[in-house]
Amino acid sequence: MPTTLSNASPGSRQSLAASPEAQASGLAVPPGPGAWDNSLLSLAAQLSAATPPGSPGRAVEVLAVTAVDDDHRFLHRLFSHSNWIIHTVRGCAEAADFLERQSMPVILCDCELPDGTWQDVLGILERSRQPSLLIVASRTADDFLWAEVLNLGGYDVLMKPFDPAEVVRVVSLAWLHWKNLRDRAARQGLQQPLAASGA
Image 1: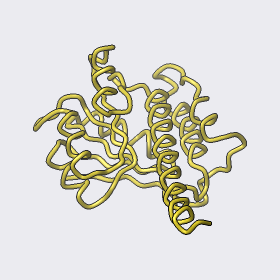
Image 2 (image 1 turned 135 degrees about the vertical axis):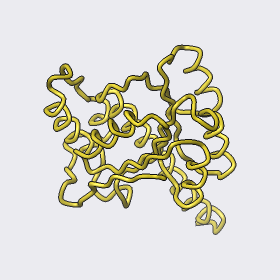
Image 3 (image 1 turned 120 degrees about the horizontal axis):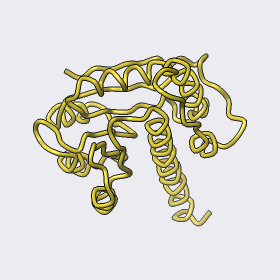
């Protein structure tokens, strides 16, 4: 069954002193495992700051497709300290069912799943024509996988076990890229009627 964790609240959103891109790319690598809670609080602030108030019309949402219970716990714990929303499903079939009901800006997907692979999830996105950005997670992330993911239309690759700062950095940049693509498409949609009318 899909699970969702939401901690979005308008009061928790922070205004940006710099551009979203600068906020998202300036993440500090957290200290060792013993400082996990303090690191999460720091990352949570950066997660919230990477979401400009009101710009997406909703909190940043991510769908994680993984059958690994430890990954579910890690991602829920990481996102629980932020105003982001994480949804989790366990395989391709659940992902397809979820994406029929709701579009997602960013999808974090295991390389191998019980009922398929990341390529099957990419195929689901292509068939549904959703402009989601796919991040592939793997313990054997290498140049070959990275090149394959990019060549087939994915966004990036994350090494497992997950590093909190790297998850935040890559997901933040993916969401910002998705937002830029959406905003550009909206501008083009406004410009075309003007051009047709001769304005």
